[in-house]
Image (cartoon, rainbow, N blue to C red; front, side):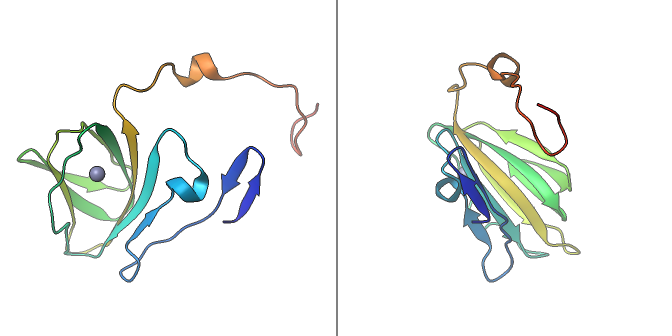
Length: 133
Ligand code: ZN
């Protein structure tokens, strides 16, 4: 863990062939979602297909290129790709032969969001090193 305070936790995590998955929910104290960082070495893929009973997932590719399989359809992934998969979706990932694939996966209880950022955000008069009070 890099930094933490009463209202935040922050860190930097990496994954590689020897430590290919990092679950960050507990590390960060998440209360409404799980977040994992995943690594697939070039030319390798998940060794299983999975779905979820109630959670939806969002896959966010950080680097590399890959292939996503959902319910029999397959499509290419690259850095910046974002894919949402509903719970029942049968999914698996594979890295292409020429690049390792690194991605985040956010997992949250489907239909649990009661409002969105624009309604929840509160503007605060609070000084920072770059903003006046
Ligand atoms: Zn999953």
